[in-house]
Amino acid sequence: TRRPGYFAACRFRACSFFRLNRSNSVPDTIIRKRKIIEMDLYQVAKFLHVVLAVVWLGGGFILMLLGLRAARAGNRDDFLTVLRLVAFAGPRIFVPGSLAVLVLGLIMVWLAGWNWDAWVVMGLAGFVAAAGIGASKLGPASQAATRLAADGRLTEAETMGRTMLRFAKVEYVIQAAIVFAMVVKRSWSEIGTLSALAIVAALAILAILFAPKSTVNAA
Image 1 (cartoon, helix red, strand yellow):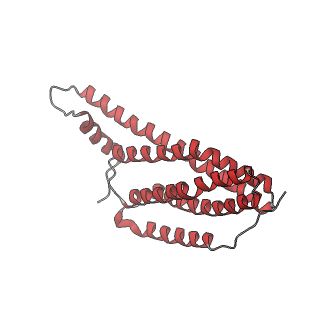
Image 2 (cartoon, one colour):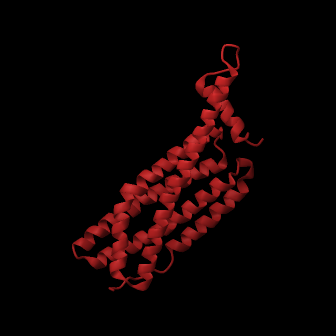
Image 3 (cartoon, one colour):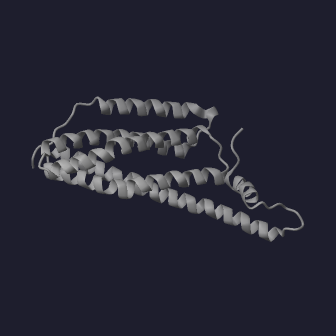
């Protein structure tokens, strides 16, 4: 069976959340107002979820493109500038933004009455993988590369930056898969689409990890 519509689910959640029922002791107008409040909470959560996702994914994507452009142009100064920007934005924008996206997404799942469908599980698994790459690779690498550049060890900073850029590509393949899963919302009975997506994403990640390494020269 397919999941109920989000409005019907919100109506059920509203009654459960506020512990109301349609007895004679509770006016229908109050119940309707409480339902509207619950639906409005979903809309607010959805709006914030989308806005913060745009900031998180869009901001990181722009930095990745700037890094790729500097690397391919052989511009050392621009490349190191991008690394500094990543080191600055990571703990101040991307980490809190990604956590807020996760929390708001879970709130939306609860308010809309969605169960642990395949797209929800895949989204959470993708978030864990992307967050793991960010926490273990991108964040520490950008901070270390910035320190190396400040100490004048530019070659080491560039090498670390190229490695970071490679893992940034992997992270964005995962994030693209998450966005696709969130849009199509496939259940376990429709797992074929998400399975194909996982295979394509895995092949793209392998191609990134085993692609020839580029070099960055002094500007």
